[in-house]
Length: 385
Image (tube, rainbow, N blue to C red; front, side):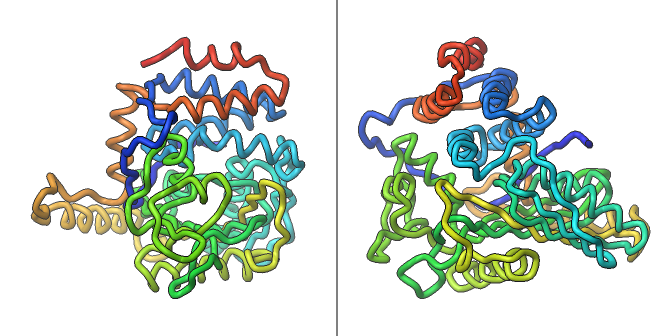
């Protein structure tokens, strides 16, 4: 399996640092080696093999490195709860359904999505040499985490790709435009162009204003959310992340009003109604349930022109965008994916910030799998940045 290098590109709705009780404390910085060792110990405690542990831990680590702590090791408590409930299966084997032309369907059987998605993409990409395109429907998967990882995985093999993910297994958490209650989920979408084996640029975004994980991070840090991200149970704007983070009360907003709402609706239809057997409207609600379906389109650019010609036009256009005069208060125009690359460089040097609440939550779930709290915590604390 090819090594995975992740990237991410979404215009974030940043949290606002406002003290909210005892949780508000400055995070400590840890080396990427200690963060991965910490996560790996917990994943092995869940029952993941060495290979699966490395895939999942690497994925989560890079989410933290790129500044997307919402999809980093803070996901481990949820994964542990799902394993205990039987809704996430360590070391699962995917089921490959019969291929029809360029279309592949893979049932992940609720395995860890980080590994299941890569296996499914490898399976689907076997169709590319014959058809110059592959279409994948990955069904019934555990959380696939940062969808941009899969755009970059395809770009590393020279392919253009688009990936849409719906989220089932729990009640919807995003209010459609004009509604006061939830009707869809965060439903992310990602796409990338390959240039010299890299995803440049890489778009990776939820169709909600923020991902649910960013609300969890704000709650753990004792921060408020900025305007435009959350609605309370009455459909009124709120800055308090706790009801949503702790009890799933209220709704996230769709980005861009009717535009993001419409895009989120079609992600649901492509990944759920077309590619799988359930949408968020029909699948049963599971304890701690987060089940993903991913609909992917993978394209060989040589069906249109030489790989070098397509990459050259892509590069030239990106440079044209970057040459535009920056807006007032902006140092430079950044392409999708560049903020994450900058964060990766910075955090590799200065360390990954982790708040006490998140660390405690991870240690607590590790203990429930009969791991020793001091031993697990020591893997992290021994190498502060």
